Length: 513
Image 1 (cartoon, rainbow, N blue to C red):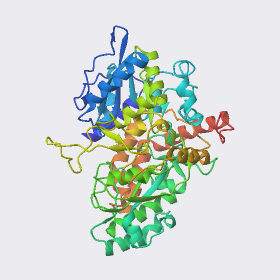
Image 2: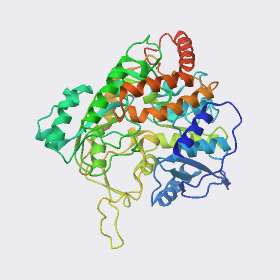
Image 3: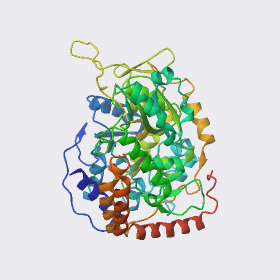
Image 4: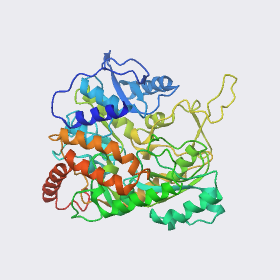
């Protein structure tokens, strides 16, 4: 059923035809009802969807947010969080069925913009949204600008380059004197994985899941569209062509090595079936990969429950994918565009509002230490005793909800440095802009090919990218079925569009200021 839902979402994303009316599923939790945004007196209510497991105290936080919003901009919101595994299907249903809403977190931002789902914001960014336009790094605005010149979403002002990082338990790194900066290729990991398997049997040497990891990024490859379309280009070469990554020598080396690691018992046996999720608290894992910016190991340590150290293994390259990782968009069908932009403007410029969304209510969900840093207040039982390892009663999903640079930093067991955001700003200045930042292929005329390619991808990708099957026998079948599904035709179209884009953007090597 999950595959069918993903398939229907992709078809809807690329077809320029009238969508069938889809039933509204019930797999979400809301702090209020889902009626269309209404005006009560002079107050406009906006319906806002975002990703994340619904919290026990969501309504309490929603009420507090509304107290502040009414005073500052005469607006309230209905704050709806939809679970991690359900959100993309839910958003597709909302857009396809024409269900009223005003604002949403926008994964697959470009695909939905091409569908006409998002409001063009250009005219608002010099008026109601001017403050946030000035506050957010210009490169972010460049990265979300579509080929028609339109800006259809508000990017999260955070690290510009999301680098792949490999994390390890600090205790084992110290115990064995490991210099993690020396391990930046997949092949270099083998002696470490072998040692852990032999000397630390309680630890899983290498953790992967069905979405796997973009190991091709180690060789400079970036997806040109969706991950389920395995077309990539090498961002280290400004003139690189579009390729089916699984037909390259680099991919074959990666797949063969993963197979070797799986056979040796370094990779978890259920990797091809394991759903993608956050770091499981307390799990004993030696190697794990994730995308992140400076100081990410602090938050990862909090999630895992013990100290982790991490090292970036991909370049600090600003790509379209990294820029569009956290975008909030306004529905093209909203009846309150001005109020929606005012809300996003406040969320990106007002520390009181932004911290409330991210951390909850001071004195209820967190306290401040002597340095003014946030220390979460643990959930308590009916007798007022802290519940060990309990999920917090409220928590925002930081990358989805606006400007990081006005957030308080974290204290507690793994405190952020007090100059955290200055370190982020310094890192942003050093990052390099991809030569194709902002390029977005339009594949809306190829819905059948896209549908067939995704079906083939789902059949083979999880097992190949986790080492779970024999590469020599399975990879040729994968590529043959991709060709039958139309990947060569899609590749030729993407290449044609990229050539035209490069001709129209000869100076994209540097960011527009």
